[in-house]
Length: 392
Image 1 (tube, rainbow, N blue to C red):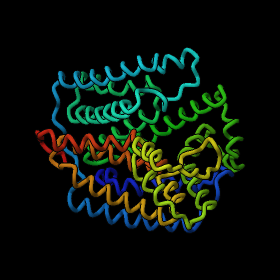
Image 2: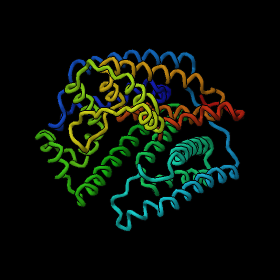
Image 3: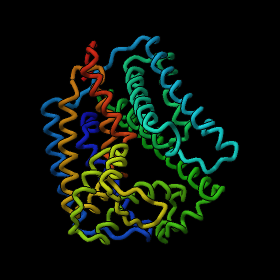
């Protein structure tokens, strides 16, 4: 069971099944009905992804082993380097974002924070390091190791980058799940309860940020919640979770409804959908390319799955090519990442996180996550492995 939950092809299937389930609840009148062409496409991809999932299972590319411990000295050194990097950025930014917001600077945008180019490398290395240190904590718990791991998480709070924090924690969850020989019912129940608590507070914070109050009235009205949801016994705070999980599919369906499927923008597809954004921004300027806008159900719900931009560029052909690109790159990564490496578990966890968040946006174009995949792959070849007893 645990091997299925950490197999990226089954993660793809499970992620979109959850999205389709939430969407089927039909709690918002903003969202268009899902069409048969979209259903057929996802059904076909599920069948193909399951075949690829069984392929990598057969070749034993999905497994877990504890990782050896780095010395505390080397952990402190690496963590210190990361913090020095953020110190340089705080100086460059003329302040610490979290403190600036507490002092009343509500216009802060984390996307504009940091030293150009350097910031991308710092954030991605920081995220990789956090997941790698968590793998060591799971392999052999120690107070010092946990403190060091926590120190790698804190920068995301200081720069108020919730996406970075959520992705790191998601990768850590994949590490934890893969370490379990089997998942007991009590663990499943505890996980569900934890998620319900997290989603409830997510709704509370959403209300507070949007209106300055705890009330859900504004988001219910702005999102055109259906009478079915309004009259239900479900706490209204959970409407935020429904919106964030299902709105990317709503935007994809809106794109399919409004955009001509006979598109032929190969340059835009290759540049904006395949290349990481830190490269595509520069190549777009050189080539004079502009990115076409994606239709949305509303201005403030802009996530749209990793298929939407491909549809805007090439119609259904672009969507099919994007799925094929996902299959090829995922298989290639699993077989290129050295199985005996100390970094295999970290690489697999980050890859699963990458796949999971493709339900929200194109992670191939998001350098903040796709570049994290480079570090485990690179270090698996540069650093000799020192294996310990396997827990596969």
